[in-house]
Amino acid sequence: MQSAGPAHAGAFVPDAQVMVAGTPRYGWEHHRHEDALAEAAPAHRAVLPNGLDVWVTTLGLDRTRTLLANQRALVKDHALLGGAMREQLERKGLDANLSRIVGPGVLNSDEPDHRRVHRLIAPAFSAERIAALRPEIARLIDSLLDALPTDGPADLQASLADALPLAVIASVLGVPAEDAGRLRAWTTAMMTERPEVMIPASEEMAGYLAGHIQDHEALPADSVLRVLATSRDADGRGLAFEELVANAILLVVAGHDTTSALLGNTMAALLATPGAWGTLARRPEAVPNAIEEAARWDAPVALTPHYLVRSPLDLGDGVVVPEGDIIMVGLGAAGRDRSVHGPEADAFQPFRHSDAAATNAARDHAAFGHGPHYCLGNLLARLEATAALTAITARWPAATLDVPPDTLPRSDKVVTNSLTALPVTLAP
Image: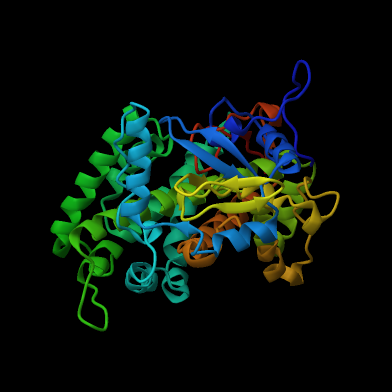
């Protein structure tokens, strides 16, 4: 399947605002904008919904990875980054309040703080700990599939792609399952970067998680929130309370929203590709590669969160990003880099790799980032998506989309690239 979108009246004009959810998006029309922008220049100016001026990159895969690994050029320190963002918004006379996710968490830190915080958090997402979650994830998937309607359209985005990662992260963190809906609503509001909904949601989530951290002894002994609250490094130091709250917010948001986008995007691409869904049902061993191909072709994280440019950044072709500007690194166009994937880079090919080349498929993209801020939860995201896709294709190998693929609605989130609905008729 080639990247495509609804027919446009008149000449097509690529628009960087599409990359920051500045306009309604459907199907895969954002690919057309990203790829055309990549042909034109390595970076483009855009304005986020809160009024913040940013640069968004459309670099190839290798240069994207090089940039993400360049800690001398990009600043993630929450005080410096947040300060620059607030200063710009104040200068423009706009609301300068920021989401609490721009706090002292592992995502918004540089060395040596990043290494210190990472060492305390990483064990909670080790390969061994993730593997131990397999039975619980399988149980949740069976329960969600049992609840899907078979006598009418099923919304696989809401009922599976959103519901599964949300249930898993609530269980992992140790918060009550009945609170999952609140976590989802807060996350959705925060990811729009519209201050009128982002700031209240951010404060409510922070207050909720702070309460659980303060009362962490009441949480399950192996819950991530309790483990983080009691973990100490070799010098006997733990995370400060503000760091605990910031990292808890990050784990909620990144811990389910990215996986939700990955699973939803993969199912949509497969259903829109003739024969792919049924073939995968007959070849479950190919599921991991199909997920990696979907991550490459339609990255669940379209843009990295904000970076501060430390010194003038020369991206080539006459584009120099000034010191002190905010930049977000594009991961979508990087996955469809023709210099890496050839003339059919914009085609979704779920069986591009042989079954024996599973590790190669993961090298085709930077959908989970690269460098020091590579996604901590990538193993969990891949496990959930693989288990869910294997189970649903086996149960309903003849499932079909209920609407034309190019009418599938996209969310208005800035960082994550996800659908808001995926109506499907389930058939054995």
